[in-house]
Length: 135
Ligand SMILES: CCCO[C@@H]1O[C@H](CO)[C@@H](O[C@@H]2O[C@H](CO)[C@H](O)[C@H](OCc3cn(Cc4ccccc4)nn3)[C@H]2O)[C@H](O)[C@H]1NC(C)=O
Image (tube, rainbow, N blue to C red; front, side, top):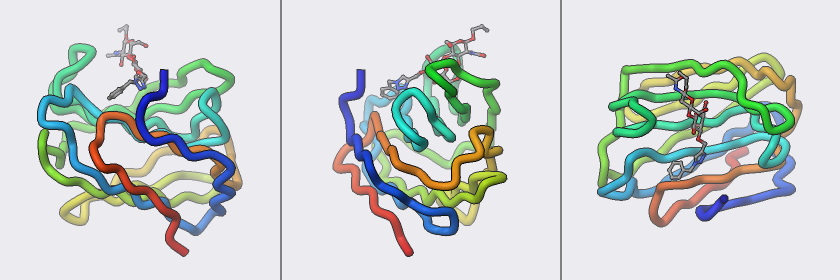
């Protein structure tokens, strides 16, 4: 069930970026940023985990196609702290997505769905979330 920020009909084109800023809940077990066509077709599920699903301080990324999860990719270089403010910037082209993180870190993830635009954004586990597309 979605209970955080949800935005649809965004029509964000390749080359634009989506900036998501928010404060991580102090007791958060994790948070998630999802972008794609709709809630069942995600080109990126970006899920930093502080302590959930058996993962501690691991960034889990995945895609979802027609409601079915793809293969996870995991990153242990983990620039997030519970209770901190955070900002991520997601840009993409038809081949891959790039997520710029704090401290000039960035991760890439394949555009497995080949999406040419992003219509859907949802964010869970952040307080005072603010998301917008930068030109
Ligand atoms: C080894 C066999 C079992 O594998 C486990 O299977 C679990 C169920 O599929 C995997 O967990 C799922 O991983 C997905 C990504 O691959 C998603 O992260 C699934 O969560 C979806 C989700 C929950 N939420 C709620 C939420 C609320 C507040 C903060 C963050 C999320 N939003 N989206 C999450 O339940 C979990 O990552 C996976 N673990 C491994 C090591 O593969």
